[in-house]
Length: 234
Image 1 (cartoon, rainbow, N blue to C red):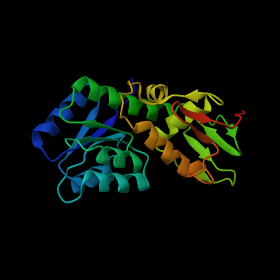
Image 2: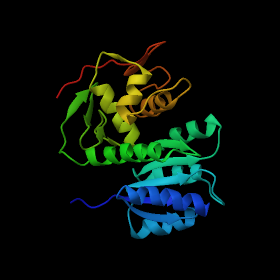
Image 3: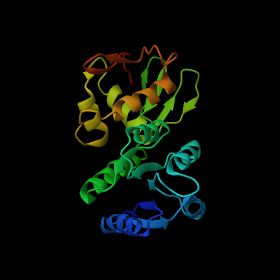
Image 4: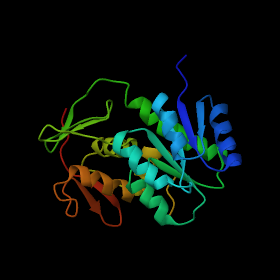
């Protein structure tokens, strides 16, 4: 039997924090609880996490600031949890490196599905040795979640960025709709106004395009989706 995943729940409201922790524990995960960022850092110093459920609206240092700091030093899975109805917060959270988000009040089944999806990416990222697919001078291992630039530098990818790139590399020369890409990376349905894919594409372009404002690798097919243009070799 494999060890349970370690999930850290960061939520200042005690009732919500207890609910989140209970859902994760019922799904077989090991859970630590933190009421703020300071407590979260103390937990992480002694016990690495696989996933952090992070409330945006925290006292002192909010979840967006914590996401920036976490992503600067780690590829830990991050799901933002918020009551805010403003798309700007969710989009900004994805822009700065969160893997997913869920809005309160949340459905427990939806929450666990999001948790499962992010943790699945973590498991797949450590399952196999480097497989060495290549495109436009880049070298990419989906299994090891490793991306190497034409200059030989390793480029760090978040789990969501990795899964999006893997989906694109698996379908070179094909226009993939936002609906299909979202299903491939999160296994959930796309809804009108969902900008998750657009945000992740912008993040990925900043890492692999010579000029992200005039992309040549991930090209927009207006009204249809996105096209991965380079040939892919092994």
